[in-house]
Image 1 (cartoon, rainbow, N blue to C red):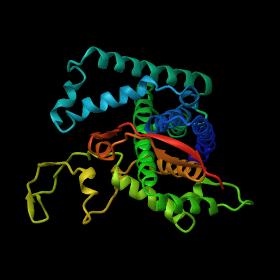
Image 2: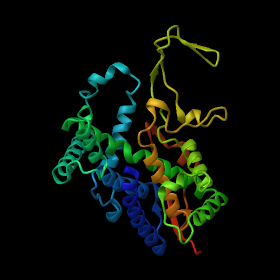
Image 3: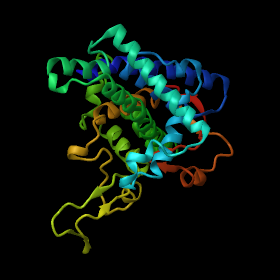
Length: 336
């Protein structure tokens, strides 16, 4: 139900983005693809979390939130594997800008939460509404205002940056492989007949969209949205053996997916499994599929002169998410 609620909102934002790409194509101006993908995903998380418009695509400006997420992830990633530091993390000294960015972000989240509760209550029209409605149906699930604030902070922080990385990865590798781009375009153009209504839920069907989903899987492998991995503790009595290496009980272990997924012996599991599986997996996949379905059939993209492919990959930094480097492109409307 929730995915269907979000589908029309994401589709409208993609229409807005298409309009901006057409403007760039008409003017011949190069634009930074990562920035515009971030604009899309920030607007999308506004519609998903609070059913509000953030107007990033319309205004073409980067919200302070985006810079805050990048700087905060860099700060947290520096201490993430020190298990005892969490109680004192909040009181560690930070520079003035980081402190101000944190205050702005918290105030922004509180404002969105307050406005949403006052205007629409527990209506199941966004993530916040679904959380509140679940608490009304089952009191054991009821969240306090501070708990709702914490959830919405997480939705904003984790709900856009990771998906924008995945979309950027797909577009980057496809744009640099013309044969793959053309193959995906051909599949997208034939996926729904002229008399068939578009339905995003069907994009996950491997019989209908085999190559689309293969491209997404490969994009998530090449540039995983969560490249750093999560630390775990060996709690098996007596320890464990991993590839003939003994790991004693109580040892803290962290596996780096960004490295692991580039090893042919290892499988790519970008959304994790079991209790630690990404709760937004289906929503993220729907957004990525809808982006490619919208953009690939309409546009070709040419990288602007002066771009250094080696530097783009080598200098992309990993801080839980990926710190994306600029990638300026020209958009060309495809003549069908």
